[in-house]
Image (tube, rainbow, N blue to C red):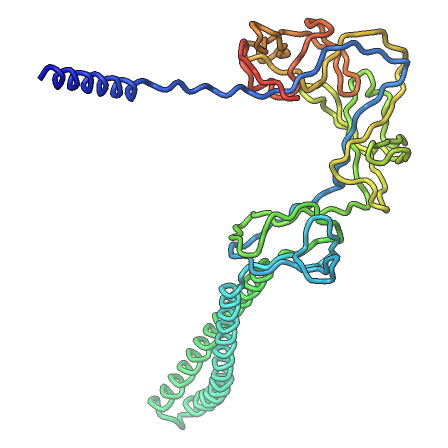
Length: 402
C-alpha cells in the first residue's frame, strides 16, 4: 500500500514539473544587425584627385501601359539557338516595335459599337436630308401658289376661304422645312459626336499595344505573358546606349574647375588599359545634402557597346595644390544623428566584452575627395560603419559582414 502511494506521489510531482516546464517562456534572441565597416585612415594627394563615377543610361524611357488587362503577347526575337523567345534585357528593338499587347477584345467591341453608332447617325441624316429636299420643293410650290392667290384675292377673283387655305398651306410647308432643318442640324452634331467617340475608341484600342518610341536597348523587362497590367504599369525601360552618361561628384572647391564642354577621360576596371573620352554636359546646381558634393555628367560615345550601364568608372582631376595627410572616412559612413538632425555623425564599432558594439560619434565634416571626406572627431585606425549605419542604435551590438 505504501509503495502504491509513493508511486502516485512521484507521478504527481512529475506532472507538475512538466506543466511548469510548459508554462516557462522561451527566450527568443533578437538577430544582430549586419553592417559593413571601414577603417579610418589618412589621405594625401600630390595635386591630382581620383574620383569614382558610375555609368548610367542616357535618357532612359519607362514604357507604361495606359489600359488595364491581361498581357497576352510579348515581342519575340531569335535567340542564340535560332528559336524564338520573348524579348529580354540587352536586346535591341527598332522604333515602333510592339513590345507587348494586352487582351484587346473588349476594346475592339467598343470600336465596333462606335462604328455602328456612326453608321446609324449617317443613315438617319441621309434620310432627313432626303425628306428636307422634298419639303423644300413643296415649300417652293406653296410659295408660288400663295403669290398667285394674293394676286387673285386682290383682284377679287378668289374667295377669302381659298386665299386662307393657300396661306395655311404655305405656313405648314415652312414649318415642315424648319423642323427637318433642325433635325438635320441635330443629326450632323450627332455624327460629329459619334466620329469623336470612334476616334477615341480607336486611340484606346491602340493603347493596348506597348510600342517602342525609338530605337534602343532593353534595360529592364518587368512583365511576363499572363500578368495583369494596370494603367501606369511599367513594362520595359528602354535607352539608346550608343551614348551613355558618366556621373561623378565633386566638392565645391573643385566645382569651379569643371565647365560645360570640358573633355575628360575615364577608365574602368572592367576594361583595363582602355580610356574613354567624354564631354561635360551637365553640372547640377545644388549639392547633395549629406555628401555636400555636386554631381557632374559626362556624355560618352559608346558605339561599340563596351561601356555597360551600372559599371564603376574612375577619372582624375587636377587640384591647385598638394594635400597633406588628413583623416578621412567614406562618404557612406556619414549619417544624421537622431538627436541632432542638422548635424553629422558616424557609427564607430568598438570591442566591448568581446562583442562589436556601435557607438554614435558626432563629427565635423571637411572637404570631400572623391568618395572620401575629411572628418574630425574620430581617430585613425578606428572602425566606422559604412553600410547599415542608419539602422543601428547607439550601444547596439552588431554583426560585421566580411
